[in-house]
Image (tube, rainbow, N blue to C red; front, side, top):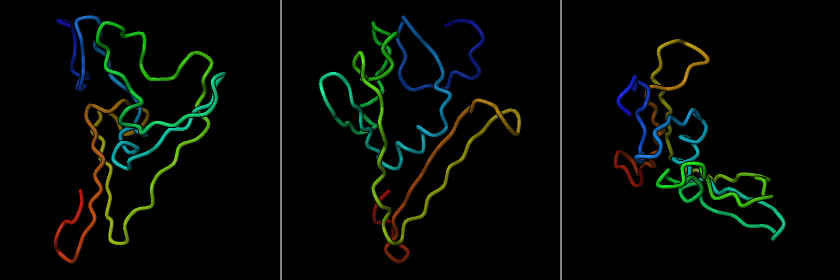
Length: 118
């Protein structure tokens, strides 16, 4: 926690864990309201991506809600609105193959010049 932490721009830490999440795709899937589908010994289920990842709390070894024996089978994304505009931006030290120092995914639906949904 007190060491080198320049790339630790994370939301959600605990005294037990601080770590970066290296996935660019997950940032975009959050903005897109993805749903994650899983299958396992107890059958099929789905969860919105906003409920899939867990904060470290006192159990940092649990990163997500996958139960033992479950696997992700697919992910769905709702259709974008007719006047939707989106953008993904990643700030990193090098041009390729680098974890983000910070990233953002944004989607807005416009009604003329007004933002209907963001």
